[in-house]
Length: 275
Image (cartoon, rainbow, N blue to C red; front, side):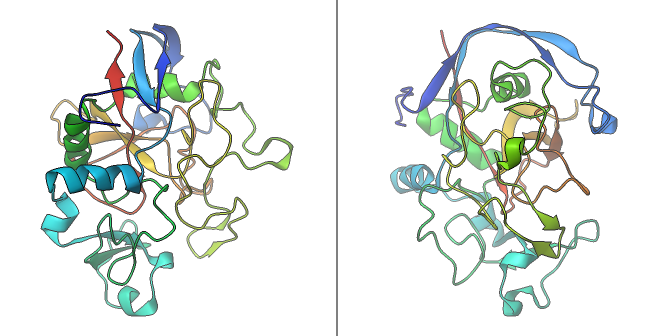
C-alpha cells in the first residue's frame, strides 16, 4: 500500500444491509454483542490481510514514526513466549497474570530484547496502539474500519453464523484460525500450527476473500467503546483466545482497550471509502 491511498491488497465490498450482533448463548451479553439488529452500510474497501511487519516497516522507514510502546519503553508480552530471565520479576496485571510488562518490547522486538522479526515479515505487526494504527492509516491514505464494517466483512456474506466460515469451529477436523489449543494459559498444543502469530495469509479466506478475521491478532476498529471515548473497540480475537475463558474469535464478539495500549496480540487492518 502507498501514501496515495491505492487499493492494492484490498477488497471492495458492496454496500447493503446485514444482521449485526448475536444472541448466541455462547456470547457475552455484557459486552454489548446483542441485540441482533439490521445495519446498512455503503460500499467500502478493506484489507484482505492484517497489516504485516513488512508493511509497517515501510511506514516507519518513510516517516520515522515512533510508536507508543517505544515512547513508553515497554509493552505487554505473553509470559509463555518469554525466556525465564525476562519473565522473572516482570510486572503482571492482577486480572491477567499471563501478561508480562517487558521493557524494550515493541513491534520490531515482539518478545523484548533479543527478539526480532526474522521469519516474521509476513506476520501481523503487533505492539501497535490505536494511535499508531491511525497514524499508519493517515500515511497510507486509508482509515480504520468502523466496527459495523469490520463485522460485515468478517461474516463473508454468511448470515448469523458463529465464525467467518460457518458454525463449526473445526469443520471436518480442520483448523480454520489461529487460537489456543490445550489448557490456557499453561499448555498450548499448537495443533493449528502456531504458538504465536501466524502469517497474515494463513488459513483459508472467508467468502469475501479476507484472511484471519478470526484469531491470530485482535484488530483495532475506529469506534469508541463508550460515549466518553476512553476506550476503542477491538475485534476478531487472537492466538491466545480459548473457549475456556475468551471465545471472542466469534464474528459478533467484541472487546476494548485504551487507545494508547500496546500488547503482543493486537494489530489492525485498513479500510477506505469506495466513493
